[in-house]
Picture 1 (cartoon, rainbow, N blue to C red):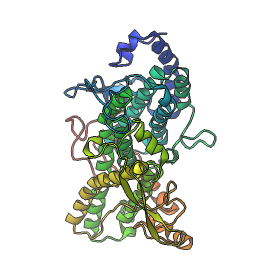
Picture 2: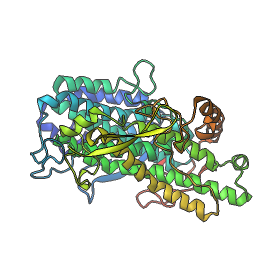
Picture 3: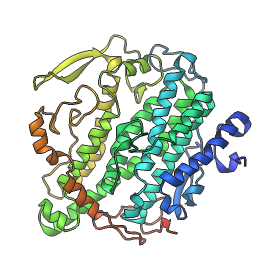
Picture 4: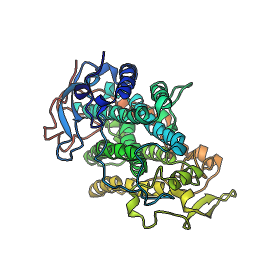
Length: 474
């Protein structure tokens, strides 16, 4: 049966006028729905959820809100409005007109960039598919599902590019995006972070704040691309990505707020006492932060990268907020990079700026992460507590780049393997930490009620009250 594109798939790319694209999407859509049923939040297929649905790119009214069953969600395809006379903003083609079609010499590389980005979208849905069974409130359950359906829409966005611009190769890649699965032994997702299990809501909030923030930087970098359809697609995706980070920031903030309340009620900061009162102690929150931040840092790639240099030179992928940099060619500039010296110390190496693009983005990401930490720490300080949450060093627990295989503490101090083994459980979640956090994950689905380990939100969604029944469970 043919799809009614104006009703079923909101879009501004005129799908209905392209018979070849229509046929490709008609073939792919049932496969996507089957994947959603098998790998998405399938236990809630019959539940009505108060969801935001993108319907246009108009900043004044780009989305509608309403009760929707997730399998019936209208996954739209939108590109940000074209910029007349847009020019390439970086690299060797600087100043030339952007491309509306894929240049033959960059076809394979652009396809791989799109596939890698596209692979992260269904991966996170798979990672989070069971969290609804232990949600702390209907408000949080709804936010989980909003993140899930928007990751599904982002997958549609990448699949549209593959189908519209890459022919048979693109169609095959689109099929494979549904065949890989998070954590699968034989066909895992492309990037290691997206194979990590997310079995509790503390991890979910860390993921949406820190890992989705990496996603923000990747999308911003691709939004600079000389391939204009990719740039415009990513520009609109960033509109939705902001909510995902909001979920993470406010989620962690609410956990911290509840912990501070319990500390005040019991006049203690003793972690064991805090745990016995059903809250999450601040040192454990720090451990989870160390884990997820270090995992996200690897997503930027190696600190010295010929691929990054090539992507920049050829105009395929720039730096996030490229216009904020004074030099858009980076031909003669260099970057000072900290590296292990092989003798237990640190040395500096001067590298060409183009080869250090990943590290430039990693540093910008860490600076951006500080926004949430300042807010959380301000509340901790107001409560009269000396503890402060902080980001781990970019050297800590790395599996990609110069620091891969080198042990450091969270401050970046180089240590030996013996000290790492002895103190690892001080820095990242131990098995007992994970067991404790999972013990707190008891489902709360009464409207207005909240699990004891997290504070209620300060405001509801779309001006609704916080005790609104955001999900009608089937």
